[in-house]
Image 1 (tube, helix red, strand yellow):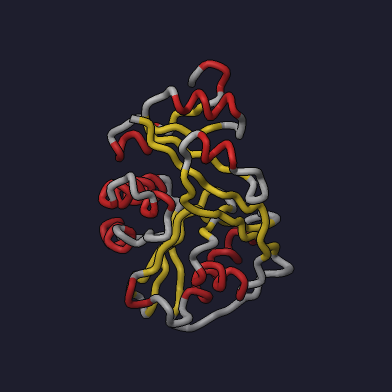
Image 2 (cartoon, rainbow, N blue to C red):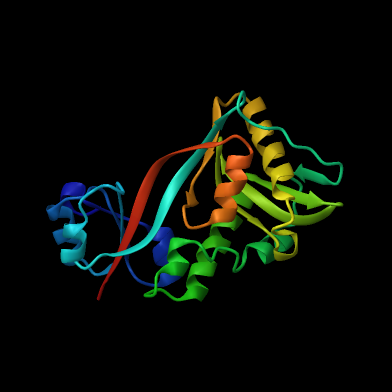
Length: 224
């Protein structure tokens, strides 16, 4: 970590993009100045109402706005369907086929300074880690794998549905089942992090009784 702990390295991103990658730990002139003097790709998360003048002065550009859906057991709307099931006995190769190229709304895909192929690899690697840790639910339709939801405790951290099953109203059955299992395991709430620019995800969580909080604007900068 750099002096004064204003920048934190993100080695998992360095591995796929092939350049040093960093996250700024605070929004301040000191942190932005340190980033400007440090080669690599930089990420900062700021309150949407924060004055963005400093970001623009230091060459940072907007990539995304993240919001946090959250829901308790009392608020979760249980939705069931006989042909929609969930399970953790997943064929990794099938899940990775669904994952690859599925995250067009992700901030790394939307960053014009980063190659899309490397952004795809980032999510592929993340899914591999979750599968190895047995932290992935398979989403099945008529016994065929149609998607997945990765989780870290009660947080849904990575999820995707195969193209042919999207926009058919199926996802609410799977999300309801996974959230119900996590809540039954003793968690007070389930939560996630999604792009505000992804209306399908926002509508899905809202339909299941989720509320939203902790919005963050994401800015990037690439320093040669």
